[in-house]
Image 1 (cartoon, rainbow, N blue to C red):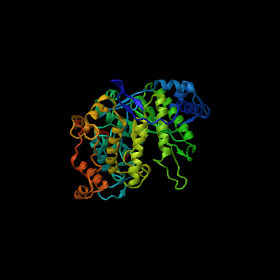
Image 2 (image 1 turned 90 degrees about the horizontal axis):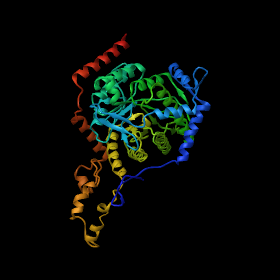
Image 3 (image 1 turned 180 degrees about the horizontal axis):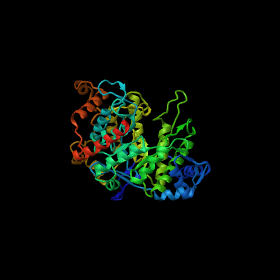
Length: 490
């Protein structure tokens, strides 16, 4: 429990907090990660990055094999920002990533989607990206958006669909956007669009409203496209999530500590490259290690091992003083069923208790392959309940109500007391979960939670209108999309 403040001699608030590893264990994993980088090294498959590392004192061998000394890692860790503020499209602070501030949001690029009208699993379209952003824009406990799918090859050439996916989000939410890009050219175009929204590239650097996601290849390999994007983000001031996804027993050791050590070494080597490119470049750690199910060959997305890894990586992030990336509100289930609700709730709670900065993939099913809007809406309410839980208990003379207990005595009740009228609104009330008696629920149509969620999604899509972009900004963005299309056609 973390103390908040004292009043009248009492501890007023204490935030529930999960503690997984001891300080010695955290330091052991850090030192093991440094040993991996010094002894084994990483493959760096981009000449510019190799040059930066060699000039900084790393041992570059065999053209792309790099051994990074511990002192260089420690030096670069000192330069990485400990706090990252991400803004909304209107230029207002939306995510203050520091300490135990927790922000939940969507995930990117699912291969399928659960159709809200038919309930069938199908391939996504561009319109689905827009609708997911619209729902995100409405939900009060979702802090950032992501594509949750993508425009189809029939709608746009796949090589430039990253630009279109970004614009579909940009037009349908003012919230920060977590995005991916297929190439350096795509990332550069997206940065130009974002700079149009803020006014200039300098204004964007001061008030970034998007976060880029890219990753190394486990084990210990930094591919050219990831490095190009990583260094572009460093140069332009785009906050970047650079995390790997080791598969325990597949691409990483099967033990939790081994997978965490490998993942952390991969991140630290990426951090070194960003800080060599530009000191103070904003970078976010974390990621997810999870087992390969040896029975099914499925990557387990939401099992207890994955959550333990996420919490451990948060504790390493706290050791470094960096913001972190976690998962929550997601499931390995194939449809929105009891398993999905259980795993979504469990994952939201672990991320909240850990105090993770960015918790993505809200609304994911099928181990990250399928998007479900009803799960997004359900998770929003779960997050609200989780926030209430994380407030802890206010303990002072007023809330302990000793004088009131004495006044009412052994045989009275508290219903008509002023204290009750003053404080009853502190109780959390859900908007979707049903607390009615059976007869009232039956008279209201005996609706299951799944039916309620489906109706809520449809209501949002019919009634919520996101704030539009200005006509001038839309014109400039369309020009960038047109140029990208022409370059593909030629």
